[in-house]
Length: 158
Image 1 (cartoon, helix red, strand yellow):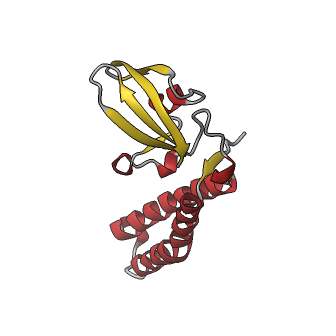
Image 2 (cartoon, one colour; image 1 turned 120 degrees about the vertical axis):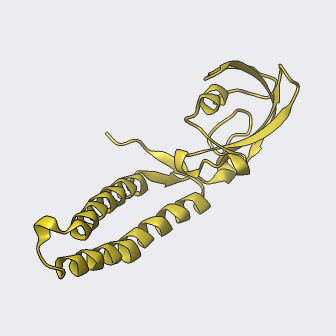
């Protein structure tokens, strides 16, 4: 059974744009590369042809996976989100109890993750550890280099 993922309008548009690019730009380019390589003669010893066929295979796999993601994607109406607890698309202001640093993350679907923009996957250890927490709650989260203790300072819409 496929997993449903939740996206912002912007995230869903990026998914659809990437799929459109792969199907209407990359696929014809690879097909053209195969045709050009095929025209060069003996296919059994034609490295260009085999490389192009391999690229086509990888491209088709990527298209199939992306189509599955898009078909199982749902857009969230962020105005309906409950700000009393941490959910997907919540913007969460946190305080690291150990070093007193304050951080702000927005929890997003895996494909929208971008740490430079403060977008953290809801399926990451920290994302999972924050889900359902309320303002004032302390989350002790197992991360690769130990346990991190975070206090939820504020929750708002992403």
